[in-house]
Image (cartoon, rainbow, N blue to C red; front, side):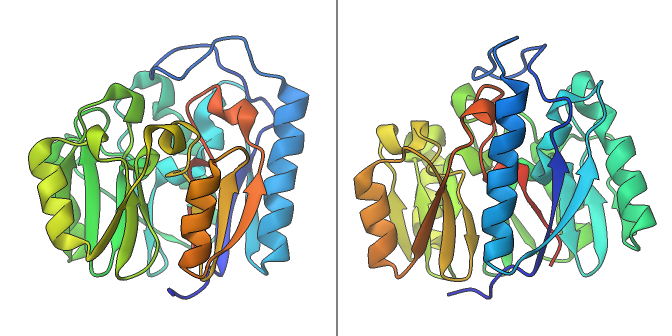
Length: 266
């Protein structure tokens, strides 16, 4: 297994709602804000039970998607490489996160601002960074990411807008194993993944629509969305993982799950 996560950043959903549509999951004016806050508190409790230090940024009222902390960028070696959000509705989030990272001693890095990329499209696997391109991240951003992070960046082309971020369909577990819903990717990207991931386990349509891929792994523990299929849970058990089910149904109304809500700091 990979080392446990030590520290994360999450955003308290003081003003969470859905009042615009930028992905097919979004259900405007459907969120129970009080329930969302309770679900978020439940998520934080599980993280703390796993001895993960939880840092909190407060949500601002005009940016409902600010709660999805992982989208804000990539933290590495005490610096944050800030996202370039494709949609104008999300661009102001970056201002608040930049302020938080600066005040908390992180170095600030950014791409050229020409090409979009979002943290939900970037997932590490061994010494590589996989980037889901098409809907939010540009292929052209991959070269910049590679230069900034000094590692190999592998673009994977997403073809189904329902899986608009890579973390909606791809779930790395350890240095050998990952889950993936292959129909979310182009055929060439599917073939590339099969070559790069020694143990690639296919997710069913039922599992991926229950946000199985949007789980959060810390060592031999994994936080999964309440309601994922039993066969997925059985696969996790076979891999030696201890599962922790968390209800994030209110956040799914905006197209985000457990992984979307957590940015790993170390």
